[in-house]
Length: 267
Image (cartoon, rainbow, N blue to C red):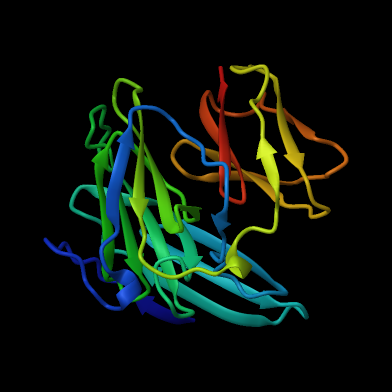
């Protein structure tokens, strides 16, 4: 097993490793939950084509195993993280070529306080490159959810980071992300996500969508801590998914299709 140790440096300034890793700049903050409808930059797939893969986060590490189509092991890597004092790694999302211009992975890492916390220092979030260089510190909040996909607005690559404070007040932070994009990297899916119903729900919730192409994209469902709950294949002939949420933990969930997202609540 090849082990790559990531050393998280707590820095006052960002590492400038490549031009794409220059400043990720906060453009605007909304005191509400927002979804983007429009062009999506989705060259975020960190796993190779035609492969099976599994990622496990445990004990402040991320283990990624990739299998070829013939079931042989293509790679087996363990990445080690050094959390800030008093915190532990609770989720890691891997992407590629969103914040760098090579084939190395980059990581959205969320940390949660080890001791129970009911204040706005409960969660931290960092964006790291594959060497452990800090690309962006998204600060400390009760809940922080930075999703690893970008959207295109005014010919600019942008990132949405969701935050929730102790009083359940939402924030949507919009960041500009350096780097170039081309039309071939934008989403080929032309669709909309309509409002879910009933919302809130205790048993079942309908998640409507409108697909205007023959593609069958996946719908990913996350809890509000950014953990992937399940992925569902969409059918252009259906137009909605009736999701059984009776076994879901009470709380807020986000469902996302290629960067466009909506929210539903389980009571």
